[in-house]
Length: 143
Image (cartoon, rainbow, N blue to C red; front, top):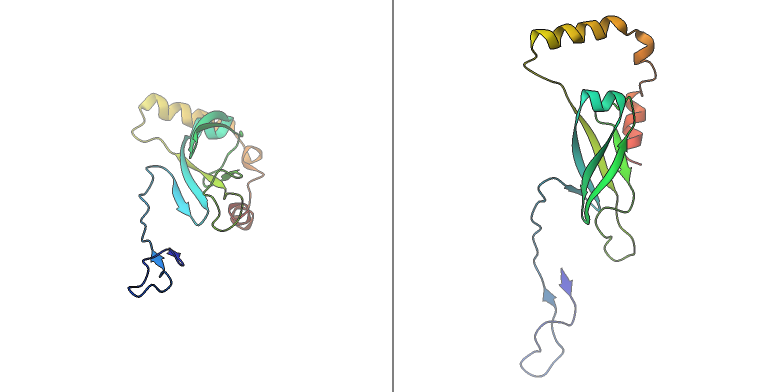
């Protein structure tokens, strides 16, 4: 960063030079910077994604509660406006994009597998309709 006129004065009493400041930003443990926006990948169980939930997400000011809608899909984005990084040279802040990272369980017991088979048999194409297309998901990510 350059700060004009804030450096040392010349030896013969001339105008002060420029001050150059080199900064580095330590990465946050859960928030990823994307310009003025921040991104958080929220691990979510398939149950919470299917039936909805209330979860806490990290922000720069601390944790904030958000509602997960029933039927949330993988990589769906929940936008928290004005919760990102401050803009440089103007007022306001970027956004916090909470990306849903739905976890699929591993190492299921025989009983759990049977319950999932029963669930699969009880559902139809109607339960899976209304999925957003890829283009709609991309547009939502850039809003």
